[in-house]
Image (cartoon, rainbow, N blue to C red):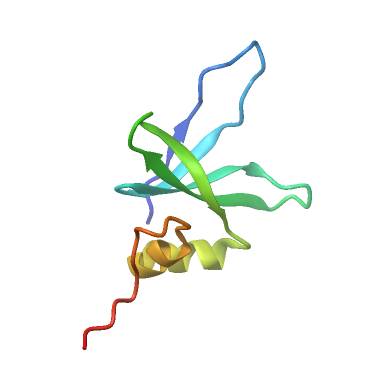
Length: 94
């Protein structure tokens, strides 16, 4: 069973921010649920820690929970979803 952690970000400019539920964290990535979508389904996201600001930023919005589960199980798939060109995934050794 997954251990989840709920994070309530600080308010900025007096506006409340969304509540994040962290599903899994594997440096520098974390998998979160950021509330619900208009259709009532959970909003699954992949976030990456920005080295200079030490804050997490959304890098990928998952289509459904199954895609998020696969990304949590297969770390190479997570790296493949990362838009940063310096991150390499599924390396082929010749």
